[in-house]
Amino acid sequence: MIRALIADDHAVLRRGLAEVLGEARDIVVQGEAGSCREVLAKLRQGEWDVVVLDLNFPDGNGLDLLREIKRQRPKLPILILTIASEDQYAVRALRSGASGYLTKESAPEELVQAVRKVVSGGRYVSPRLAERLALMIDRDADRPPHDQLSEREYQVFRLLASGHAVSEVAEELHLSVKTISTYRSRVLEKMSLRTNADLTVYAVRNHLVE
Image (cartoon, rainbow, N blue to C red; front, side, top):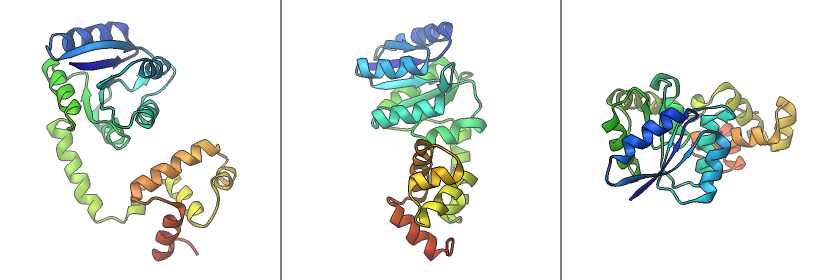
């Protein structure tokens, strides 16, 4: 049986989702959570095969929660089910570790299909989103890795590549050390690099630092 955790801040919607998934013979909803804190508590309390996750919670940001879940349970599939359109969050969610993305306008049978797909190790996105992702890959293939960074990520990248420690970058940009560490992780992931030394070598080769 597929053990599912439903995470959404609306109790009525959670019950509806539980009924939809409960009709499938191979899925059992073993828990529900209505806040970021409850989600993380449920993760610690049991074993799960999939999390069906909204992006809006009263006590935090869904994308940040997604990243924290993946940090704690890297192999746990997470299916995003949200009212937010694909254009708003889909790509960011998938890049943050989500295994699939559905809007709440999706048909009930599509939700069941998506849960099965991500649990089996696959990805689930709508045909429209799949086409958009393909176009992005084509565009990104011609762009150097550093061009894919946001403005803040690029700032952090250049400072780290110049030899500054995380604490020094935090002081320079007036941000916390934890925030800079998060930016550093994103930069390394986007650029397919592993260490600060790799950042320095890349920056020198591409004439991005003096």
